[in-house]
Length: 433
Image 1 (spheres, helix red, strand yellow):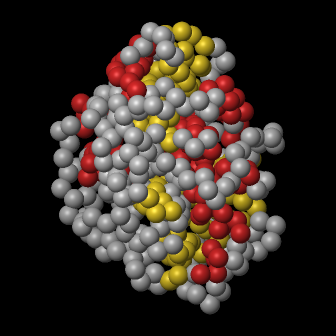
Image 2 (cartoon, one colour):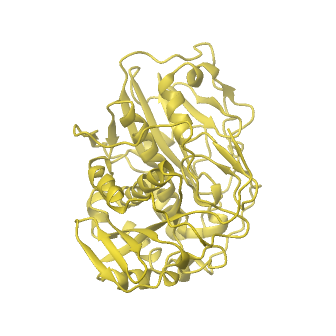
Image 3 (cartoon, helix red, strand yellow):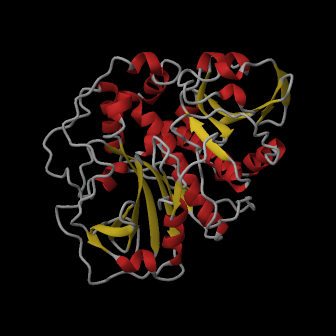
């Protein structure tokens, strides 16, 4: 089932989505949390670990005015839709962060997940908004989004030296059936568990408002039903009851970039697009990035995902591969992207990171773990670029056929994701929070 979906929405995703149209009756909102939910001011404000996780992963850090997409946090997402939220489970209570009010809300009591000494973070992906634009392809790109969120969580925990356990298989049914949310377009993408050394503070007198956590709670129809392949995948995920297997965070010392208040990730979006005219990206060290990626492999959900960094010099391109080898290539960067050339002139840029993998790895790791890892890889590169003052834009509108030919990939491989170190030729008007 997962392999069929993966093959359909990899190289053939353009062909297989161009005639898929959905009529979505639910009025569009950036998030569907009810305004009547209970706000727990103590849970986020008085717990340093919750505050750090929210600040460096979910909190809106910047508003850009001269952009098609305005509000940005440190986790890139398609069209800034934030299809991946984080569900916090602690002391039999479920919390979610409201990104537009900057508050933590309690959505449910009496949740039977975890223990009183654990904090669990669950990636909860909602596809309703994405299917308006991407139909069946939505699950693929939403899982990439979740990979960015997941790595940011690991980044915070690693920097704070907090051990964690990552679930490699998740019994989603037991989670989803306890949530007072419209889960018809949702799935669980990841799950992280922390054993706490001391209790977290929370408003012990606060109760979740019953039945109002999601403004769609009383909806009687499933708008994704016409997308048969997508609904089949979601139904399969929602029915998962397998006992979860876990692996501990690695004992090895993993190089995490320092957390910084001033580190604001940027994709350099602007209304006129990106056309690099004078930036040489001299501070960006390709060897340093490749070492950072190599040394981070132990934290990735699927360590077998491969990647190559293309570096364009004056006369040729050099591809640096995950295995430490490199090769000189004759490339045309303008052919790497499939479309959207009006907004991004890739030919004027210098660094392109490409992740790709064997289809057979889905059988070993599962579709979600494979795509999560691609997002994690791009997030590592994005944080590295941000630390040097550069923007980094992950993109899915790549030309698979050209890239596979350039890297000499056989039919057993699919290209999963690309990212470009970039800048903006327009001085952006931004409000930093």
